[in-house]
Length: 452
Image 1 (tube, rainbow, N blue to C red):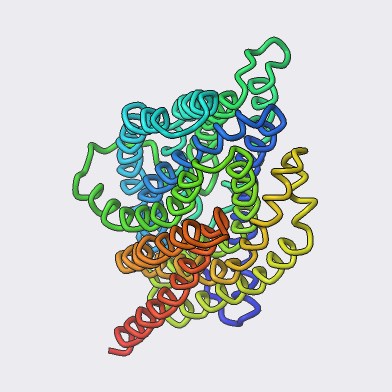
Image 2: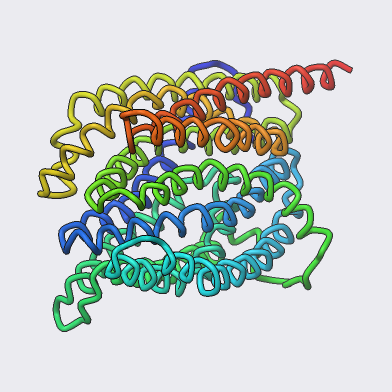
């Protein structure tokens, strides 16, 4: 890793890493955004079906793919320590793990998730759309998980622009496929909400093909020879990936699933309420791309710094990450409070849904600051390879405190469905506080080791 000394130089380095990540994350978000937007323009039942389907898909996929994100700090440490030769076996074993995870998710979708949806108290058309949407998404499981491995490789090297390039190429293809398969244009089958799932599944194969070609043919990645000298399955190496990745994946699952569980708990409310909740959640997910991108950048730079045993640099990057995220959180709050009416109108023309979404946006504004603190701190801790305690804290703050508070507020106060968002605010706030304390403990521990 190139030696960077001044704060200005560190800020420039951080920006070079984070900006492509942000563009990549926004482009990935736009794929989901257009799924919701275009399905909402089709009809309300299909929008609700995609909402329910994605509520199951997102936590399961992100949680298990998070296991593969353990490769990013691993490879970053290798690069920082000058152990380039360790990269190829790590990536190859990561691809083996990705195949197993694909099979696990595919099985879960078929034997558990789709049957669970059929037993939910939903309108019949909504159940049908949700099941078909998940079937469509499932055809892209293998390439989606494999791409996660290659992206971890690119990002760990600091080549975040590669992932940006791949997604910017693929996102318009996904939108075009949505246009064809949701509405049945140009002779294609009219699949409604299910078409959004099949469009994404096909797009994931295109994403993997482009990523593999770049890793194979382009410099400097070609020198790592990722696809040569293919190794047999190494249980020791796979376990190393899993040991770091599982707590990361579980932490992501715990955090993401809390939003999905809230959506499922709302299934007893009207279709309009579910749709308004999803609109608010969808847009706040866009705003979350900023602290999430900063978090991912922190993992890379702190991982490289720790691998090179530059603990002061690692600490400075962690402070820089939190500071930037907090600054942008104030901008997010202003956007949510000032422009909530026109934002809701982008998603639907149904006035009932718009009015409900406007109210949800007010509650969303309250957890922007907590989100901006906890996300980069999580990324910093991953850079230090400190992942187990983060998982434990996530369980306590989100499931032990946030969800019960939300349920009680929703069921026993006049807030109704908005009460669940109160629980989200409480959980995120407690998570931000506890993670801040944990980061300080880890930094002191590394400082003591460095001086010993």
